[in-house]
Image (cartoon, rainbow, N blue to C red; front, side, top):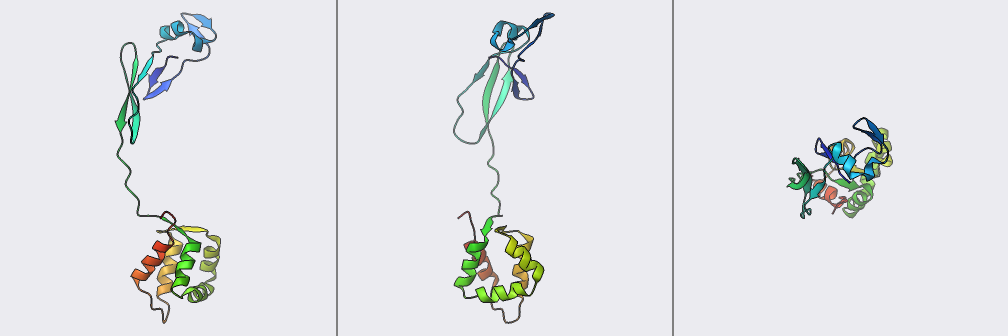
Length: 157
C-alpha cells in the first residue's frame, strides 16, 4: 500500500474516492489510482537499538523513514513507596506502636493514611506526617533515620 505524508504521519488512501472526476471503490487495492492521487511507497530502514523515533522525508516519488535518536528522559527523584514496607521498616526500629499512637491523635491524617495503599516520596500526606511525627515530644529520630525508613519502603528497588 502507498501513503501520503502529513505532519510526519503516514496517511493511507481512503477506501473509496474520486479520481479524475470518476468515483472508484476499493482504492486501497489499486496502486495505479493511489499514485494518481499522490500516494507514494514508503522505504524504511531497520530500526536501530535504543530510544529512536521515526522521522519521515519525502522525495518526488517516495517517502523515506529514518530514525532519530531521542534523549533519555531524566530520572525522577520521586518514587513510589509501599505503605506495608514502610510500616515494616518502622516496626524494625521499634516505633510501630508510637507511630500508630501518633496517627490516633489526628483523625484526618489517620483516615488518609488508612485509605492509601501506596504513597510517592513527594506526597504531601507523607511529608506532613513525617514532619509532625518527628516533632512529637520524646521523639528521638533523625532525618537520616527517616530517609532510611522511606528508602526501605521504596517499591522500585
